[in-house]
Length: 178
Image 1 (cartoon, rainbow, N blue to C red):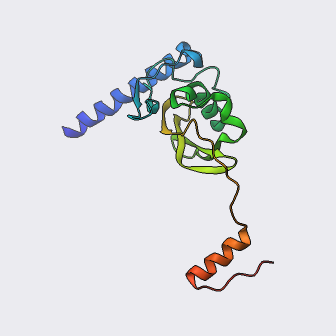
Image 2 (cartoon, rainbow, N blue to C red):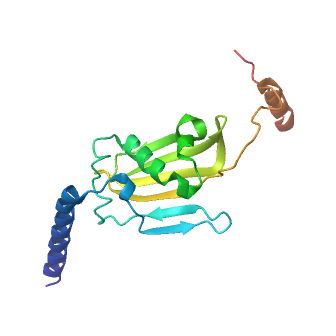
Image 3 (cartoon, rainbow, N blue to C red):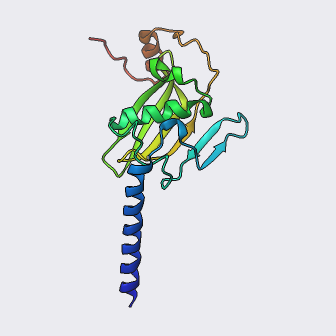
């Protein structure tokens, strides 16, 4: 008896998924019409730290404008569209301020991570993560950045001086450079 109930539940869920998938190809909305299901804002900055999307929303499923892109390109499109909610200027995504650090595409959910950098130096804790399904359905974007960050990243000492100091402080032999 119990197995029949589970079987019926599984079949019902499968039918629901197929109906939603069929609707997605006929009701796909352009990226600029995608609206979040919920937005969680950072208490101190007021910018978003987590945006979720309703995967059953026609505006999220199989967007015509992102369907033929690679997973990384698709994540970049989503991130560009919602960057301002995180306090990031969309034009700063590309040169060096937000850099794609990893993309896990082997799972049913594709996760891409974007690290904020200043002059090529990663900003600790400043990362945005885009989660989507293999079909391009956007599930969530989360993370934090430091929007108005401007720092001098010029090292105060040379690499050789740093290695020498490390050797003295930790009482270990200094490596010889090749």
